[in-house]
Amino acid sequence: MVKGTRTIFKKLISSITALSVMICGFTFPAYAHNSDYFSGIYTGIITHQNLKFRIESSAITSFLTSSVYYSAYGWSNVSNSVGSIGIAIASPGMPSSGFYSVYGQWFTDGTLGETIPRDSSGNIVSMGSNWYSLSITMNTNSSSFSGADNATTAAKKTFTHEVGHALKLSHPAFGYSIPGHTYQGLPKAVMNQGLTMSSKPWISSTVVTHDISNLQTKWGS
Ligand SMILES: [Zn+2]
Ligand SMILES: [Zn+2]
Image (cartoon, rainbow, N blue to C red; front, side, top):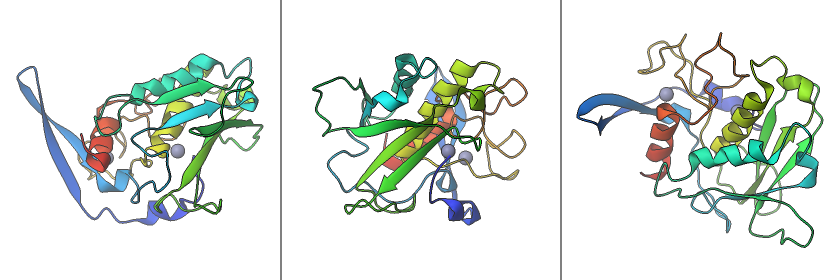
């Protein structure tokens, strides 16, 4: 879920690139699509190269535990350009600068999480803009996750997904003709929307090849 991205889905798939990855002697296509990530860069102090999150007390519940947030380490070092993701559980006396905050909020509309980018004046900006800062909000209403095969796995997927937005990845474009989008027009990706369930195997609970290919194409490998 993202704020300010309504128009991205109208964006045309203007070009498609296919990379090749060599692993263990086999070459297979690893697809990256510029419709699967946002334009723009970070203009503040914390950028895609040093992303650190401070998990505020509102985002910690019996359900949203520290292990949910540590799942975002799945993005660490999949690209040298991005490097390691920092996750710190807020504690008294801990500095608030140097981190982007993760808040908890009770949503009843099915929202699982939100990534909200801002400019240097604090105004919410579109996902395709340059960003000065951002925050993430997680839904503390556990019933929203109850449709998943495993609610904790779905919460981990949600936070990993939101951090993917913070890395400027978007929801993969729907299209049967897009290479690699083989599941009813979508690729297997953590950046797909929705709850993880066996009936929707394309909604990955973890960072997978398609996510990594887009990240490396956006920021460099
Ligand atoms: Zn999303
Ligand atoms: Zn794609």
